[in-house]
Image (cartoon, rainbow, N blue to C red; front, side, top):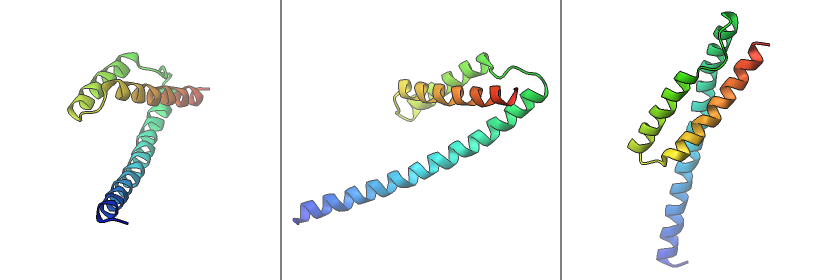
Length: 98
């Protein structure tokens, strides 16, 4: 293996280790977020509130688009990601109301 190839392999290993750490952070962060949304869902069910709040969802999407631009992340990707999360949260809230 050449010095250039060995250096490339070392850099690749470092990047992959960072990706693995970030994946773990994402999973644990999503788990924490869903703990809170489940608590919100239980409160909504207890007080006969609708499982969805379109005005808040719209504000959250706008906020995430702004954050994604600040972070140099594709806003469309961020919007799709949040829409997926919101749909999962609403699905959980609907199940709690049955």
